[in-house]
Image 1: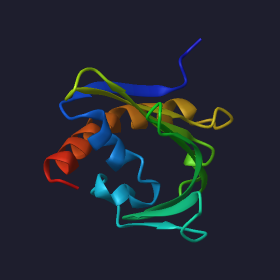
Image 2 (image 1 turned 135 degrees about the horizontal axis):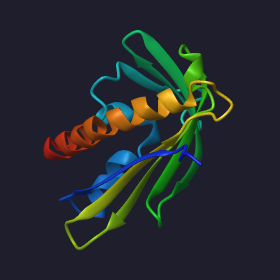
Image 3 (image 1 turned 90 degrees about the vertical axis):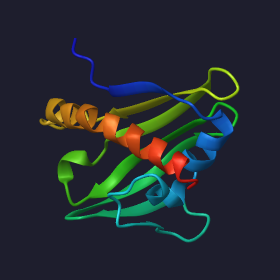
Length: 143
């Protein structure tokens, strides 16, 4: 059986707390995703949904889980201008590997009912190294 989740894991030479402060900030994804034009909570300050606008596309994502002790955040696409992404889930997991080294694991699972699930998985896998580079750049810049 083909694996349906796309994953990418790498070491970032920063303390887990510094990285977590960035990736757990659900309404402020633009702090480490430079292609993002805007990110707004859709239901006010306590909302668990956000509207993401990129050049030529948009997504509404719902926060599924955030665990500050385990350094884990998971969300799913509720609506999108690209229908093939609706129902996809994504997550970020951090694991401290010393005082200033953190394993960052990015994962995403396309909606398995989607006929293009394999192509979406490939697109996600191809983009993960860039996302990791964006995270490192944001950390270097003090975002």
